[in-house]
Length: 178
Image: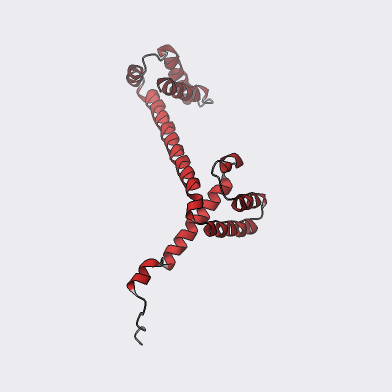
C-alpha cells in the first residue's frame, strides 16, 4: 500500500470551512424547512416575511402534484433558500419551532384527559372525589351519570357517546379552571 499524500492544508483553513458531512446536514435541514413551509397555509406563510422569490416558488411547488416533479421543485426551493442565507429564514424556523412545541403541549394535555377519563371509568368514586377536590365547581351528578353511561356503553359494545361526552366535560373543566 502506498502512504497517503501529506495534507498541506493549515489547521486554520480546516476550522473555517465546514466539512462535507456538515454541508450535507445543513442542506437537508434547509430541505426539511422548505417542506414544512410548503405544508403551511398561505396566511401563516405571510406572517413570516419570506423573500418574494421564495414565496413565489412555494406557491409553485404547491401547484405541482406529480411526485418526482414536486421533489425536484422542493430541491430547487431549498437551493433558492440556501442562496438567501440562514438569517432570511430565522423567523420562519422560530415560528415552526413554536408551532411544534404548542402541538406537543396540546397532545400531552389530550393524553392527560384520556388518562383521567380511563381512571374515572376504572376507579370510579375515588377518582371522581379527587377530581371534584381539584374542581369544586364541577357538576357531580352530571359526571357520575356520564361515567355510568360510558361504562354501560362499553360493556354492551354500543357506540361510545357518553365516553366522548365525558372527555368533553373534562376538557371544559380544565378550560374553566384556567
